[in-house]
Image (tube, helix red, strand yellow):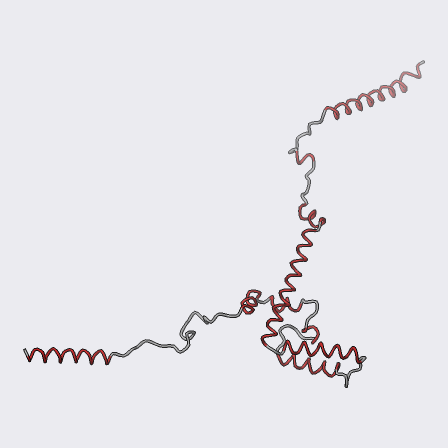
Length: 210
């Protein structure tokens, strides 16, 4: 009995050592995005999603805006920070009260507008929000123009126009059946023509004989 108990305890201790020696071969990522082949899973902001929806048309829509900070600076919507800084420095000399050649009141207004444009476009978050606002306004104006164009009576006539086939085409080459009134008018015209011909024949051939 004692020997068997010793064997049992020895066996259980050996099994425990095997369990302790077992190594965890799984990979533990410190970042949940690491190791995921499908791409980044971190949710993007709402403005980024909307910008992705517009795709390549995003910058084009911004450039079509009637008045924007980009147009004031003389740069495109794709301009990087260095281009924006260069435009700001150039216009600062033009509109600054100490160096401007414009009237002081006009220069001061332009300089304030320049500062506002630079403050918005020099910050990544404010620029992203500003870009999305411009694109949304440009798209709304385009949709409104399309709606007004479709509601124009002349445009509707053009879109709804259907070419009217000739009378023979509509009848498949067959003669059109005339109404009773039309038949009566044709009969009267035929009688008048026939009477005129008879009178002409009488005058030419028979009147000289008398």
